[in-house]
Image 1 (cartoon, one colour):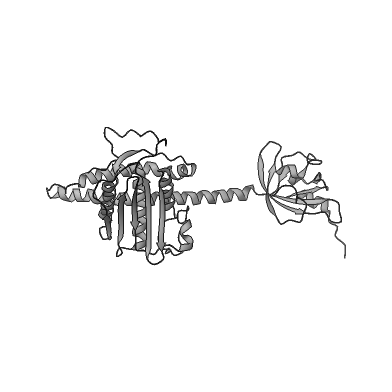
Image 2 (tube, one colour):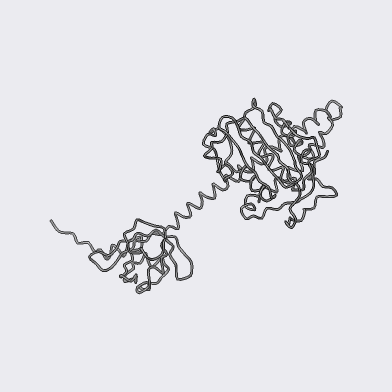
Length: 365
């Protein structure tokens, strides 16, 4: 039987992955054409160069020639650009040279980036749906009430037109807000437009809006009818409230009561949203405001990706307040929004946007 001779030099030269041999100082003594292409060098140009300077491995240079599993690295090309690499190092044995096998990860990195962008797009759409769901239904209900009254020649019930206008204005501003809120919160640059308003009247109106949207839901307001003045951003407070109430209703069901409480002291105000729903496991409560958090006991049928509370706490922080939770599995949760009654001195705010000849952010009494 004729013995087959393999030209290993030719095999390595034609290999699609880079092969680099270096001496004990890390100086390259051989590089195949694939390695030269990966690092943007001409034929023979890599010989004599420092491998550790051309390929940045995790942890620095102390372990470059120890036995290693494949690791991510960054290759520095001659033109100044970088390329993501996977590098497997084989230490010197009988030979005095160590060998590195180098693979280009650009294509797989693009695939990962595509998946990440798809996930971000999905989370944005979920956030938008979550934020817009609450104000849209009351607008429709108010307009239908007006339509039915006008169809029979009657005057619409008192407050219906004002409620529809208020809901529509908030909805329009909310559409603008959600386009940039998540990114702005992460940069700590969320715009706020501060004005004085009555938190009791404001919160009672939000509860009534939810009642109009879900008349079968057990939802109650507890607190004073008025007189809880606060200086903050009413639109941002509205965003927090609809997120908290929407969550409470979602995880309580229609037969269980959701309570919204308002109270104030000389220095601060508080809104609590209390439900009798599924509750949050104690070990998970520290994570409840994290981006994309979903409780381990949340039914698979429940919609959302876990961005509502993340946004709500970010907004609360920008308003110099706090948003906290107390919960027990099977008994429900209580979310507490605490805000300073007066905007802190020396804290800058964004210049209010033009809103016509009156302050549309303040709910009509």
